[in-house]
Length: 123
Image 1 (cartoon, rainbow, N blue to C red):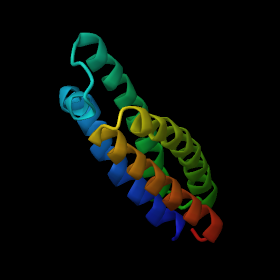
Image 2 (image 1 turned 135 degrees about the horizontal axis):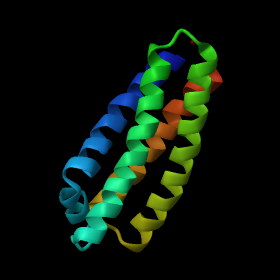
Image 3 (image 1 turned 60 degrees about the vertical axis):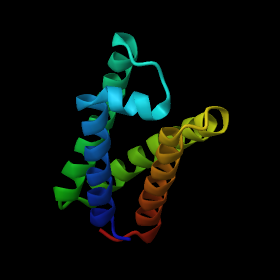
Image 4 (image 1 turned 180 degrees about the vertical axis):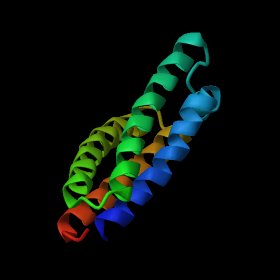
């Protein structure tokens, strides 16, 4: 996979996750089986802000002609996806919610996308 395509895939997935966590945090929490209250919604929106930040970096890298910008965005993404995968795998084994399983699959898939593009070396 080339780096531009990988950045576009990450942008699309990030936009969906950011929208869900920022605009309808209660839905995300309900799917996770987590109590919905002002505190958990605020934490979920905080998570959404981080997702949106990584998404904007991937978007800007995808639109850039700079191979270095793409590499930086993909390395940052791979790091975040590795951490997100570990956390979600723990949640999936201890909580077993549908949301934790979906999050694990998405995080691992996006980690694979970032790594494939970084190992491919193409712009």
